[in-house]
Image (cartoon, rainbow, N blue to C red; front, side):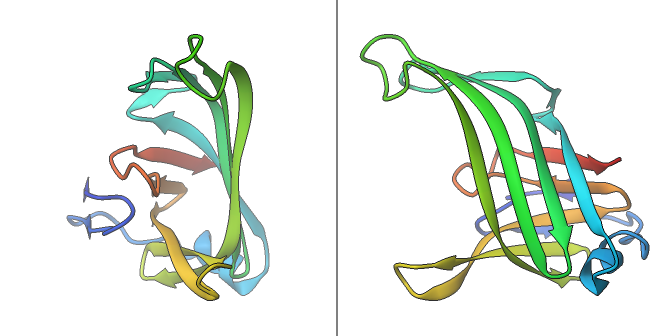
Length: 152
């Protein structure tokens, strides 16, 4: 399986990988269960993952999750940001990046949507690819930051 441009343009390419498990996403769409996917890999590494930005800040990603229920989604990602003096807005901060909205399914692709209050429209927030018990996503700002979540 090859995943390119996880979000944004969201070109998702695949080879003959098995399709979506009928037990997983269909249950969430049907409203029977809430599916919880836990972040296990970010940028190809297991957690915690440490990255640096151009301003010299250190970002440590500790945890994350996606919850799917009926046609709704919610997500959270916990990070610690440490910046040298004058290098950024954060001195030493723990952040919870959260999102929520609706989703729709296109085969084994999940299209995450949020309501944009500025445009007064439902906008695509990102995409994920579901394979059995695994959800593959990226970041809406940095599509080259793949994340892998599994159900437990």
